[in-house]
Amino acid sequence: MSNQKQTPFQEGFLWGGATAANQLEGAYTEGGKGLNVSDVLPGGKVRLKVLADPGFDFELDYEKYTYPNHTGIDFYNRYKEDIALFAEMGFKAYRMSIAWTRIFPNGDELTPNEEGLVFYDRVFDELHKHGIEPVVTLSHYEMPLHLVKEYGGWRSREVVTFFERYARVLFNRYQNKVKYWMTFNEINSGLMMPILGLGFSVQTESDRYQPTFQAYHHQFVASALAVKACHEIIPSAQIGCMIVYAPTYSVDCNPENVMHALQEERIFNYFCGDVQVRGEYPAFIKPYFKKHGIELDIQPGDLELLKEHTVDYIAFSYYMSRTEKKEKTPEEIGQGNMIGGVKNPFLQASDWGWEIDPVGLRISLNQLYDRYQKPLFIVENGLGAYDKVEEDGSIEDDYRINYLREHIQAIGEAIEDGVELMGYTSWGCIDLVSASTGEMSKRYGYIYVDKHDDGSGTLDRKKKKSFYWYKKVIATNGSDLDQLQPINNK
Ligand code: BG6
Image (cartoon, rainbow, N blue to C red):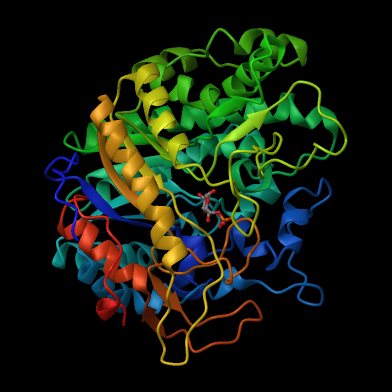
């Protein structure tokens, strides 16, 4: 029976999927591309250790590791086939990122690499041929390795100039092709994974504070300069920030725990957004800076720049909520999600321990809209799961459909609550390399890619059951979220 309910989603709602260049393009040295930070991250769960390793040297070590991002899923050569599949699902939007090192292989050159620019011209043209709007992240975990090694990543003020140059090249080149932009992917994730987000590893406990927040200041200035450039060069475009949002619950109603949850949430969920959306450092960060001995080097004009060039919308990723407790017993530590906290007894977790919480998405949308009153855009959400190809070639990913249905229902409820939402691009619409674990077996896609953790596979694409389901969701503008009848499965 199809759901007869009227849809809460407005006409023109941007349904689609999301990816990042480093996780799917492959072709890591083709077309003049330089190495970036994700190119030196190993495949497999060892990546989690490397990301937390204070001594990581950003060197390739083929004796010890494999590097799945080098080949990705070969989108670089197969983008036409993949975009045709997105079009078949009815995508209105496709969130993607540009590999900074395809455009500036080292990051500090004065002139861009034409071959890299041409590649994205082709991708955008192909998307438009199918009526799909590109939504583009300027930097998604792909800082040029040269900037990491020679400049110390975002700790260096010089990187701001390189980033602004890169952003201006993109806005000039693609001004007639791209209307939706974002500056830094999950900017607040640098607090958890500085290697990916800030381009340096935290060597000592004191690195965690002064260098980290100085690097953030540089990213905020770079983001404001990019917003300024975007508005100047493409006045009709919209440019957003992008944060990872995890609503933070207190484990109980003990006021001590509630206060602790609030403090954790402010730093992780709100610090970056407050600067990029409101244009100033929030009051709560000042005592935090004082406590940790942080004194930012703020140059004349920086604060005015931040104030004048705030973002047009708030894009965010949502995978899980977080539950906090002030005093954790040794058994409780590490029992929460990747982003911390303790186990939530009301929630089930994915095979990777990420707690599944659709209501948390409704809460997130309400909290973000209450705080900022600017349009929101969910640019990542989804379930990383093991998929099995049946003997007849089908992939029955009902678990993924169930996850997505519950989350999309929650989004509909948030829209009914009054939230203004531009679109929904679920993460990894085609299977790709996992960012945190470098695995292929952690799959998010509607489209299966025949590639495995050991690098084997034909790279052939296959439609999963969720492909047909999402196609129906888009075709009905979110009014029919029901499971498919078996006949449509293959
Ligand atoms: C987000 C990132 O953190 O989550 C993506 O922006 C990433 O790059 C996604 O792939 C899912 O995480 P993972 O570790 O399962 O790939």
